[in-house]
Length: 401
Length: 186
Image (cartoon, rainbow over all chains, first blue to last red):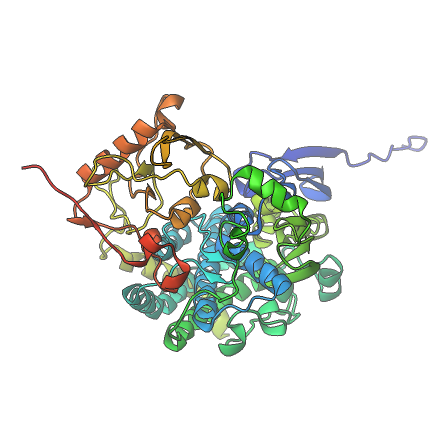
């Protein structure tokens, strides 16, 4: 057999285009996967299928009118987006909401966070193959949506907070209902955990999948439960408290190994902590007003200025008002972040005093998390890519803005 | 050793199966939608309507244009002319493009005379695009349709009254909640 030289066969690369209509990509994310056998050699995410230009649109609207736009960012926990925007504008304009408004906001935010984590757990488990958890989670999520509907009249696009407080007070009987629900909710979380936490199939699919060490997690800009799963204790609610978070007692669950399983445990623990916060908010709920005294009106310009124009505020009057160059609102710029359901949700707003934001830049966690997919998916099996997309908790409405 | 025994005896799987077994004996939480309907919370932001004043039988709108100005998606079109003798504005056109509406409820909140409302009616998907372009007549008709399906005796939208906000901040008509009494025929 001498004289024959076997040619080294290079493992051929197979390019697979996953998405944008793949049910496991949680929206319209497209992944170019270069496969070597069944392992992922390279991965390139493509975003932009759901771009609606929210940042640019916000420049054409007055400050209160931007609130419904932020609903459409992360449409699973839109309450947190609303609150994040309102907190940013309040800090910019120097408005301090009254305590009842702060507690109400904290409560609805945490309810929203629970509903987000429930939906995450449901779809993540469904992607990996656990059908029952999906149905159980949606059972509780429906109840939370029902409470939010009672509070503000909408199930997903709430627009509940407003600059300087909240729009409408919550009735006492709704608070009692939520309190009763939270009492039983801890047991429901035990139910999900009983199905998953010790389950050998779940562990086989999640442990050691999509590992990211703390240094890389920080370098990639991960925030929220995705970062805390790697063992870094960073939570905007704890470190830069806003609303009533400084007055409630809660812990920040932190993982160890930075894999999918730890991130799962983190989020489940976070649900427990959120439920605790909701309970404390209901107990500590102060009485009083829900709107700050110097809060801006829904229909800018503020009512004080209206007296200048006895003929009323037609469009022409508004234009002539702008020509006077008298600033309607304080000028300045601010970056303000809140802990979104997915991670740090930041709003950078420049005000030029015209009543409309000069520029709004939104730091969305989903977009930044997508940039970590190639790192997490490197060398993993193709089937685990689904788990990796799920574990980062991506919503494309937020990533593409 | 204990771990191994747990693994061989399938404890983890049996634990999960017991949970699912328990739910067999509970009531189903689902409802059979088209036949069985969910109760809608008061103040749900559904289909638009112009309130028909029970006294005059006409719309309440005074054409102040606040709703058109506050609307984030600018889907409200209003036309008016001024009455020669009294100087009051008379509404000639009131149109809402429901496809562009984002259902934020700002219009209901700023309306000084409680003329517009987002009713709790939500089943209005249509085959024809024209059907969800609401003109003034269609909006009044929406109101009648909503009231005919409404079960209670009195109606008040919670975005008219705005609980928890100081009364002084609200327009005069919104300070005192005056529910609309519904006269049922027969």
